[in-house]
Image (tube, rainbow, N blue to C red):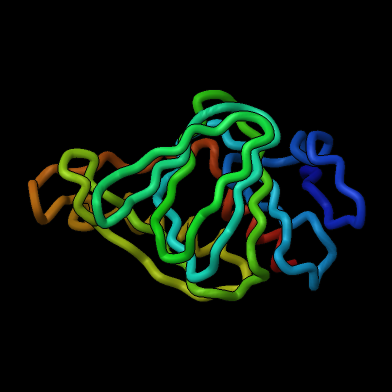
Length: 185
């Protein structure tokens, strides 16, 4: 069995990051009941979808560089990140992490369950292709299921505005299904 980050009172982020299994694991680090709770990820690939949450969050960059892409009513906006940066992720605004180098992030978020959505956008015209909303205790399973469903259905990957068909999302560096099993055990 693989070792994974463990909830503790004191956290050595870099030591715990070595235990992550894939990008965007979002392993909870603090003891149950801490709110907002720090969640750890070591991200090497683009986030598979834009995450939309009902609650504000903070993304703390411990290592690595890249940018966060926001979908706003006036278009796509990006914000660069490097070690030490804290990025505010407003509620109900689709955001996606795009690391340029391997990045270690701590996401401060409200303890689940709360409403979240996985939103997929057209890379050609920026129209919304598909979204899945959910309210669950362990969102990693919902993330996994949303991407698997998106990948398996050409209709969900076809833009109704411009007709472009999005490629399936690569899940080779994502371990959400395994993370969900550990968190529900």
